[in-house]
Length: 360
Image (cartoon, rainbow, N blue to C red; front, side, top):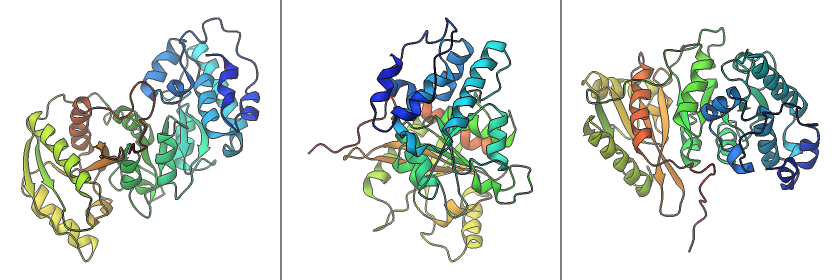
């Protein structure tokens, strides 16, 4: 695809013009992808193509700028230079772990712990998300405006906006990141269109390789407690049905699944924690799986919570499930999510986001 074809999206002409001429590198652009395919290309695939010099970070940035519009990216000049520096690093052979991967960040400024850490890893922070940061990050990913994103969880969970946008989100347990900012554990949840990209971003944020993929391929030894909150107004029937189907798939994949009941409301987080401990983890279960719904269990920041797509409703709207793991073991949550992701149909296929508009 030629460069000028990217400029057809309204509002992007000035932004794309600022990118300047292509590099003289004869190997650049060896992979021909359409604008949407570039914008939705997963980070792990981008990194492979960048390393092989079959694709440039500037190619991806340009495709995503075309979807954003020039006026929406206040950090355009900085992002352009960062993408060009990533190109140079790939030529020199000193690319970093996230070299050239674009990130939509709720806190992209300097002196922000996570933003600085992502830049040090080679990421290109080109977009500041809006709408309370959780909804903005999820929507930006769904619209192909960035490759991965961070979201705030200070005043709530990223799970609900992730679920309704068909996105993965991971909220680590409190104190998982060593920093003076005590709220960091809740304030920098990684989000992406694939689980692999979500965990890649998390591994960079926490500075740990042990959390990444691949992990144990089987879940035969895993015990799952499944809770269907039910009740009028708690969660819609199709979300419940899709979550139940996903749990049945986990059972077929080898996990032992029991349905349990948890109280629909708790007077405080301490009470919710007591129920979670007593009925799930002290009862011998490794994981709690339930539909994404605003409950006290989702706000217990000392447990890792992973949100995953559960499928589409009859109106083509995404639904999501959440997995709550033990406070000391984020890998258990990731392990089950990875096994499910490998068997479940992906929402993002052929480089595009599904058309969620309801056809009458």
